[in-house]
Amino acid sequence: MQKIAKFFLGCAFGLLGTQAMAVTYAAWPTTSTVVTADQASTFGENLSGLFYQPAAGSKAAVLWAVQNSPSKLYSLTWNGSNYVKNTANSWGSGKTLRYPNGSGAPDAEGVTMAELNSPAIYVASERDGSGSSRLSILRYDTSATGTTLSASNEWNLTADLPKVDSNAGLEAITWVPDSYLQASQFIDENTRLPYDPANYPLHGTGLFFVGLEASGQIYAYALNQSGSSYVRIATIASGQSQIMDLSFDRDNNILWAACDNNCSGRTTLLAVDTTAGSATKGKFVVRKGYNRPGSMSNMNNEGIAIAPESECANNLKTIIWADDAQDNNHALRRGTISCGPQF
Image (cartoon, rainbow, N blue to C red; front, side, top):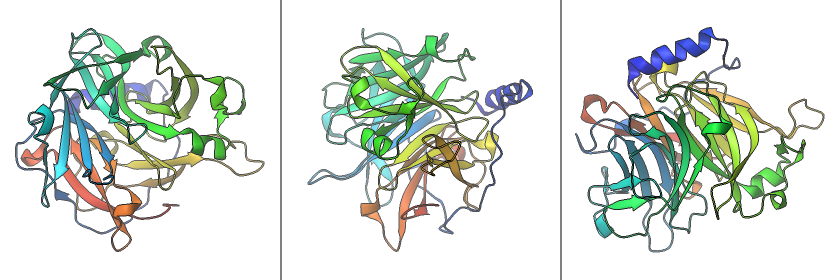
């Protein structure tokens, strides 16, 4: 989405009273210089969501990226200097994304994986091309051949979410495992009891969290992996007036919620409150807020991805941003965050 349009949408929602909770933002936790991480003019504009799939066995790590126009999914690998397009299995120019019937152009804004050993990848889309609002999660098989991927499933959440401008819808997606949600006694808003995965047959092994750009709200869903049905489990305040991407740090059980230049590149960190007697016990709450790194200007960053703890060096690990506007001809930048818990 373009910067000016997003600015006015954010202002409009603020005037209507959809304000974020008060958050105190600290300085970015490291002083490492943020540097470009792609070759100049590789992607053009509209690169959005990111997901980092760690290395496994003989398989190298993959940085997955989605572009909303044209509607594409990229498989990227690190060559020692930049993230470059994978050339195997027709990935050289990225793969065009379609809806399950093979048509359309999903406005792909966010991307995530559930089980890391599965070829399934999930994309959050806010509309079909430049059409009306269509707030969907789409599943694709990354092992499929050819240069076009048709979704195997679509969960159309439009009827369950607030009505928003077609260019201010689902912007972010991540996956949170049941193991963490159960261990922290995450509250299911349908039962008002600790979340029980057994209540949602065929949902897989975790919940999908999506972010609505216009309001900054996060919504958790159980998706029927054998069809198109879904159940909303929770509604969560991100602490920001808008939201552009989500990333769940599976090593430290932290939900990162990022905003773009409209929020000065700030990020909030959330976790389930496990404090006995707390009014928010069992709910995701903001535990920390960070300003953007001092060495990175206020860019239209719409994607974040975080490397795993296994890649820590000197107690630091990589974080990557996707710049929708491709400022200075670069769409990817990388910096560092501290390893271990952030609060």
